[in-house]
Image (cartoon, rainbow, N blue to C red; front, side, top):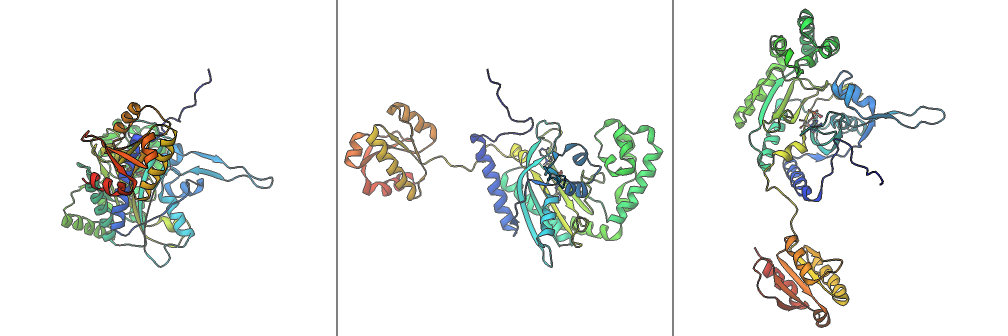
Length: 425
Ligand code: HAM
């Protein structure tokens, strides 16, 4: 027997009975972002690998272990470029903003959605192809926009019916204060070398902040006693952070300060935040982000402050209440038996769609009984029944599928009006 080809582990199909929830989520996202004046951007799924190495950081899990990368075909004269499937959207977005001069003398509020790729170990809530909605703001420096992003996300949770998320906040300070803190950490962890695992020892010189992120329980004590970031914050970052917290207080948004929140990507500075849930086991981050004021310049653009976040759509879907679906059942199911009836049925269905009705036609024939079974299953409120006689008379029979009342005959001339009346809620 020929061996079946299956989907790649950690990369999932969205099946027809799941897509209505995706559409509901996507529409809610669009509506809320519209309310705040954000515009959609669509970037390619493939970029130069160097973009991600330079922005996310060489010594991060994503770049070290998780990217899908390959060398493109070259020519006789030139080797092919090193390319990667995007593991996240911020780097691509910043690249596009620089390339098209979008942040030039103007503020930009943008968002994107789509698949991201990370070769992580798949488990519930963690996939190798997953989907993010990302929201980014370029060129606004003040804490008011930090607050806007958090309020926007909180509004989205409300709209989606998601409850019980916790907001964690921290400030990483400016590049300088972060560098000072980094040195303190190197000094501290160097004195406790024997307590570190291999991963942390490797990170000690290259990326000591990430040691704070370690999930290894054996490191919990040494991490808990490490110098705290807020103590080494510069004054401007402190003021910025205090103003953000004050706005959130005024807006009635609850949050926890988490001085250990450092995030797994290198481009952050000042405000960082995460919305977390207790309902998805280890994959507790639903929405994460922060400021990355240095990234645009680091990628060759002119200095532009920036902030954004991304949320994992699979995780949001897992938290959304059951009843959230966008796709609507057909209003009308068309039952037709016999060749002339089928042809007449196709034309009738088209005419009703011209009028805006949602009409599912029974294609492929079958007995009346079998067709009515499908009509019931479709969720339609009304069946239009057409046999040889109706085709000849240019009429249709209308049957109410909810009340199971008798069929009535209706002329083409009265059809639209009659259906409108019957479909009224
Ligand atoms: P991130 O924390 O790597 O940040 O990912 C953002 C969100 O994507 C996470 O909170 C989580 O909900 C979801 N996510 C991440 N990895 C997976 C996975 N393997 N499976 C399912 N969901 C996942 C970023 O990507 C930054 N670009 C966010 C950002 C935007 N910062 C500033 N602007």
